[in-house]
Image (cartoon, rainbow, N blue to C red; front, top):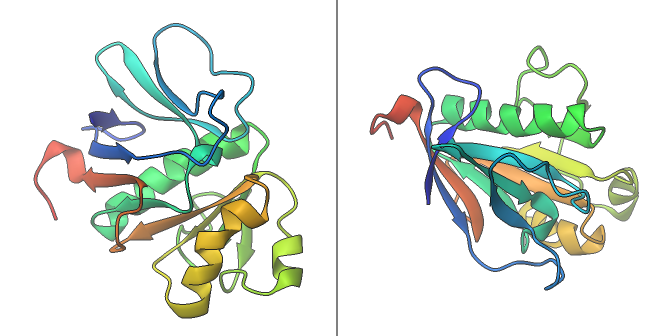
Length: 180
């Protein structure tokens, strides 16, 4: 589905893919909302974008493994920042690996040098939230794919930039143009 992104003029065009769900079958993990508030049962609720008068709500805990935001790095960072700001404002943890998002863009985020791989690094991620990173390989990518389950659906990795699209993903096109 295509929606218009938030937080930028002209709005970015988002190609949103939500295939499958890791959440409980009875829980709504995404929906089009009109005037209704975000579902109170959502752990990591975000509005991804808009289409006419509708807003696309997603509870990121429903992602099967990782959530990806692909496209030109600057544009992917911009959409990751929109998500991070919403979650931070709602009291969720936002952890950023290296310079996936500039420190000046989200001062409230925790910063780490590398994606958590070791058990003690996972334990530091005790509060519901997201971990934003650029592309990963090897042990770090394997750890990212297991993080949702290891954290009992409380921590979701968000990989941005030129990465393979996951089952839950956004492909961003800058300002509605066909930038690649």
